[in-house]
Image (cartoon, rainbow, N blue to C red; front, side):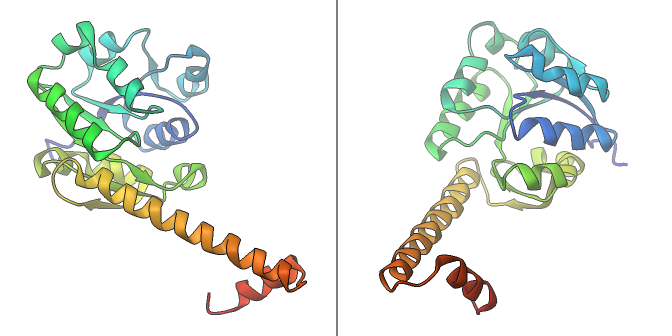
Length: 213
């Protein structure tokens, strides 16, 4: 194992995605300290070996790298505020939450002004891939941050894409989401067309499944 490979991390946010991702990390011999605003969500992970913290300040104090997997930009800013900003010197913050490129750049500026390093790593995939460790990691940030985290990312994802600097990882997430949205809209339009022709939708879905589509 490279001497600079991180095997101890802090994790904030244990929702539908965060919980299975931390479970995989614990199963891969990563030491994980966890914090969640709803303490009850930490119980199952504590039973698997995670160290539970009562505050984000204590968590950041004990770990060199902190991952965020929270609901939105407001939640990220709520975490990185007040006394927390005095604790970020020399720390690495990796935001896996889905927020916009502009928002990630604002967080980067905030973290760096406090003496820390920042990277973004939103994911493509939902609860199933998070449970199976087959997410796509869309990384934006410096290679010096990415390289020591390869083991961590390999446990939660099947591939890590490094798109460049902060803003490009979350930009890639928007590209993938927009494509998914377009496909969903096209599929809905196709189903409406089938209904207009009086075609059974179960039958046409089966036909689509067997076609080049």
